[in-house]
Image 1 (cartoon, rainbow, N blue to C red):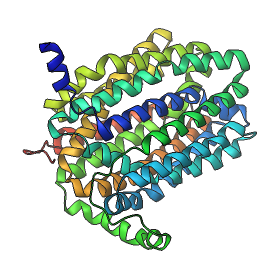
Image 2 (image 1 turned 90 degrees about the vertical axis):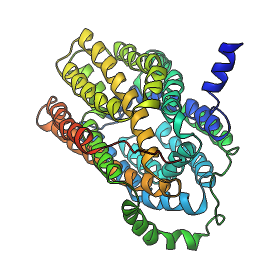
Image 3 (image 1 turned 180 degrees about the vertical axis):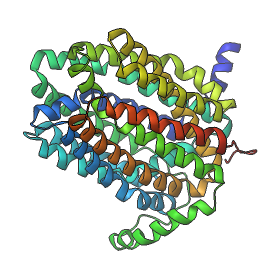
Length: 410
């Protein structure tokens, strides 16, 4: 009885909006990782190159960036729920293009459309932060990592089965068809969300158009209303993501073409990443309940180590690299999200999230573009060196200039 009571108290936050978002993320993350296992090889199979992969990523993330500050403004003024539910349905239909693509150009169009639909990203970040009490944020974001990763774990195995049974291209088409179905289910679930702020109702088309310059202005001025540590945390986060973006799309290409890992073995190795996330999510969440900055710092050191192991890897080193990378992911996700919520007043979270996403998506797109060009035209190892180098200033900013607040925001 005491154990059951303690568990109920420990996980009392798992209800309402938070539970709906997590359950829908389980569906979404599984489908993301299913085609994600062989995405880069799919683009190459449709006539693309490493540079084309970078161009698609750049265009997608520029489209994402272009709508983030207006998305944050709309989330704070008109509410979170309507943006989240309507755009989740739209994402489902965008993925149809990926399933029917006969050339990389169709993937390009689909990526740009998905980027524009991501206008709801600030709303979903804000509603999660709104739904977690300050003392449970570390555990709450750790649980997100645990449950979402658990749902992702079977994805590489299923991707491998589809690949082996139907070949690369047809297997990927089936995978994207599954994506469409699961996103639709998640969209219906999100209709049950409850609004977390007082709003002025839904905006008209005229208000949406008029909100663009206003949202840009407010997304910039919001940085005068939050602590300096939040600004330094933002810069560290952006630099970190530029570094990872230079290599992330090309991991499978490098493993298969340069390290001679079979495509089937890559699916098995990728599972190691998800298992690591599952094993560490709860312990890391409990640590982040108490500390934010130290886990974030450790995540950057672990990221640097994983890159070094990967670029000079064989099967064993890749195994270790993905374990260490998994540690880095769990620590950074939980600690960054909790610290951002601690430093940002509730009424400013949409705008802060929107501006953060704007910069983040721009640098990720640029990282994809530069990484692809360097991979194809200079050497496959060069993007990995770029990643390693950019993690150093991110580590320095976090260690010296980011400080936890004396009192955490509600």
